[in-house]
Length: 178
Image (cartoon, rainbow, N blue to C red):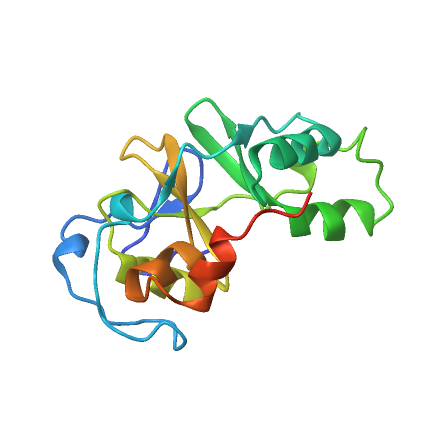
């Protein structure tokens, strides 16, 4: 995958959007439903402390972690080296629907592989929206400058910055299905 201008490869083979000087630029590219141009730092809206599993973890174990943590995705990492992202959709489409046994299938074989597009806590919400639109994703991992994962930012997190009374925020506050 060739990175877009402004993305730089990291040691793990992913691309990050923390090129020098970028945070100072103003970008007003909001997903249409969110409207507005209120720019905030990712650190102000992200969900810190994302759940993580190692690439050799089984899909069944990762699914239990998702249930226990009440999340729809986990980072796939070795310590501070982000390998990929595993979503509940990855489990359904790439493992279950493909006939793979969740007890024997590793998350490294079904997760979204590198390069993983990431944000830093100092990036802006406008940049997050731009990347979500470009890569057609609803969540982005947040990593510190050294590449260590520190959380996630979701489309719902960003919707709350524009309108704290939006339908997305109401859905996000609802009790989880158990």
